Structure formats: structure tokens, C-alpha cells
Image 1 (cartoon, rainbow, N blue to C red):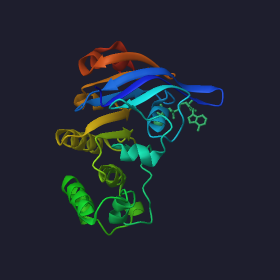
Image 2: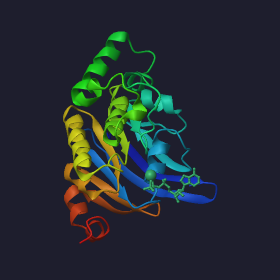
Image 3: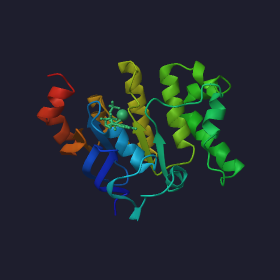
Image 4: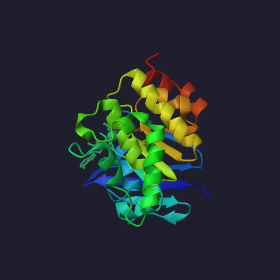
Length: 235
Ligand SMILES: Nc1ncnc2c1ncn2[C@@H]1O[C@H](COP(=O)(O)OP(=O)(O)OP(=O)(O)O)[C@@H](O)[C@H]1O
Ligand SMILES: [Mg+2]
């Protein structure tokens, strides 16, 4: 059974269909990428999985259970964490407060301490700055904070919406490197990107255009495609 299976998902805002009958599936351990240009429907797919926008049609199955109709906190309890587009950290809260604020309430003090320690180990820079206000971090540090916050509930699936956006190539590579580490520690990844260098760490994915899947396959298949070469690598 797939960890996540999307079947004929459609998302619409009024009459405008942002996502049209999109299907894909992720096995445990995958780094699955959704690539596409601005407006392709990438964020809408992640938001509908998280319960932030309703699906207009199709099914969203997590280990066989349909997530449609669940509230965002119920989706989080099902083991799916979402690093939103634009990071959305709380600028006036400290790094430590940003990390603990979305911690699910039924967890114990001990699990919170363990989660914080795991995040600080992955991102030592956050540990050094644990008392600093989130809004005063650099762009790269804010992205790490957003990822760290999503990891606090030990998700089975981590979804990230353009984590490399606005970062220098060096910092973007660092973020992708950390994602590879997170995956090696046992978390499956669903990665939305426009930056095709993320294919380096992908196991497979899809390319979206105007809300539809235009290509699906393994990393090699995506990397070799005319579409990626032209649209993303500029060759
Ligand atoms: N809340 C909304 N109300 C109306 N239309 C929306 C809304 N959110 C998104 N759309 C439209 O849906 C389409 C897909 O948007 P979406 O944000 O999913 O694309 P995206 O692939 O994430 O783009 P980007 O790379 O620019 O973030 C776009 O045409 C957008 O204008
Ligand atoms: Mg988007």
C-alpha cells in the first residue's frame, strides 16, 4: 500500500480549476517531486492534502484512509506535516517558540524535548539562535526553522512548498542536502519545486502544467525529458 495516493484530484476556486484530475502515489522512503512553473497548481495540491482547501473531486488516501474532509490538525495527527510556501514563521516569537507552537498537545514534555533535540541536531544554527526572534533570522535560517517546525511532530510524510525559493544556490543546496538527511532518517518527502536541481535527490515525480500532469516517472526519466531540459535547465 502506498504511503500517499492521490487519485484524480481536482481543486477549484469558484469556476477556476487550478488542479485537474491529478494522480500520483508515493511509497515509503520516496522523495517525490512536483515540478511546475508559476500557477501550475503545485501549492493547491499540497493545500488540499493538508485540508486547507477542499478537493473538488478525487481521493487523497494516506495508507488507504481517505483524508478528504479532515481538518488540518487531523491531517497533522495522521503523520503529515506541511512546510508552507513562504515559510510562514512567527516573526515575533523566538526560534524555540516557533518550534514548539505547533507541537500537538497530547504529546508529553519528554517527546517535546526529544523533538527539539532532534531538530537542533539537524540544524545546529537554530540551536545557537534559539532565543532570537524568528523575524530576525536570515532567509536560509528561516527556511530551516520552517522545516524544523514541521519535523517537531515526527511526521511520516514531510511536504515542502518551494523550500529553495529566494535562497542562493549554495543555501538551496544546503536545504536539499538536509532533506536527503531527513529522508535517510526515515521520513518520506513530497517536494514542490520550480528548481530542477532538486531532481538530484528525487526518486521520482511529476511535472505539472496548467493543473495537469504532463510527465510522470523516475528521476532519470524526468531529468532526461525535453520538458525539464528546456523549462528548468535552460539548455
Ligand atoms: N485562493 C485562491 N483563489 C483563487 N484562485 C487561486 C487561489 N489560490 C490559487 N489560485 C489560482 O490557482 C492556480 C494555481 O495556483 P497555485 O498557487 O496552486 O500554483 P503554484 O504552482 O503553486 O504556483 P507558484 O509556483 O507561483 O507558487 C493559479 O492560477 C492561481 O491564481
Ligand atoms: Mg505555489
